[in-house]
Amino acid sequence: MSPSPILMAFESSCDDSSVALVDTARCRLIDVLTYSQDIHKLFGGVVPELASRDHLKKIPILLDKILCRNKLSINDLGYLACTYKPGLIGSLLMGLMTVKSISYFLNIRFVGVDHLYGHIFADFWDHKVGFPFIAMVISGGHSDMFLVRDYTDISRIGNTVDDAAGEILDKIAKELGLGYPGGPEVEKYAEAYQEKECLFELPVPMKNKDNYNLSFSGLKTACYLIIRDQKAKGELSGQFISKLCYSLLYTVSKAICIKARKALNELEIDKLVIGGGVMRNSIIKAHLFQNFNGTGTRLHIPGPGFCTDNAAMVGYLGMIYCQRGIFSDHTLNAFPCHEAEDLK
Ligand code: KG4
Ligand code: ZN
Image (tube, rainbow, N blue to C red; front, side, top):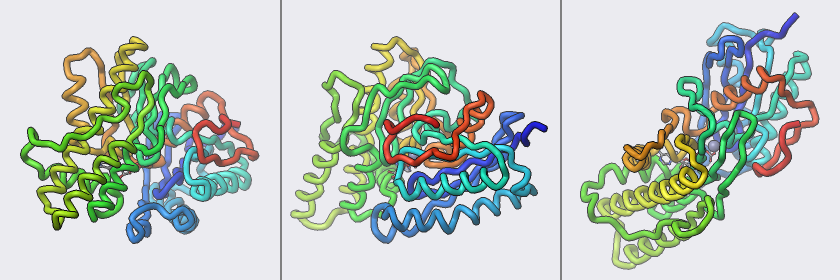
């Protein structure tokens, strides 16, 4: 008897616990449920041990809830998928052990999914982009670039050097006294800024480097210095924060554009997919679409719900792997970095 076509996917690489159900026979996302951990707001950043402990509590609750609201039982599952790298090791282990345990007891197969590849194909559910294309993942932990020839033929051509884009948004927001995560706060203040022609002059990261890497630490330091000078003069006004936030987002989008254009031109590719949590940002998105408009490049950015971490993106690749007979065995480990070993 062939297995049930229902796949359950798990994402727990950082501070979001998420589960999804996929119908692998109809290539359909049935449902997705995500819980974003609140506890880290108290600390202004993710505390790894608290993240793991929260996954331990929340994953079983989400699992029960998604089965229940779709009138399914655990015995209806035919396949499983989970993120196994990169991410916080304790968080990854929570998802991986959950999947290994269910797989063992139900005697069904599972597959590990690379989180960054998940971001690339995040909303292929509704919007497929033909191969080959250039992909960028602009998230809290990564600002990477990939040449994507197929679901299983992906080369990383650009790396994150020190701070990733989302990381500096979070850190600068903290310095400005805004909440965590910083990205949405920076967006809120930037949206209120009216004088778009009057911006802080900020350094565009890596703009003259002959590679596809991105580093945002210089931009972070430049913002810190402006904030320090302003603090020395007195309180940070709402107008000052808005101007800095808008200038920062404008510069981040410029850096993304420069590197994307370089890769598209040099590799002669006309399609670009940019995913990851930072791509939820409406200002960055608008700048990117403006920049690529009329250039012959087709730019695709996933819808907001598919940019930040979620199990639907893990489910999509999990489904492709299952359809191609690619599975993991029970020795699969979790790894903090992308370059760690490939599927096993
Ligand atoms: O992809 P993601 O959920 O997790 C990682 O894989 O890192 O991205 C999280 C990052 C955080 O740095 C967060 O501040 C940022 O995405 N982010 C945003 C927005 N929403 C989340 N950045 C800018 N604008 C947003 N609306
Ligand atoms: Zn992510």
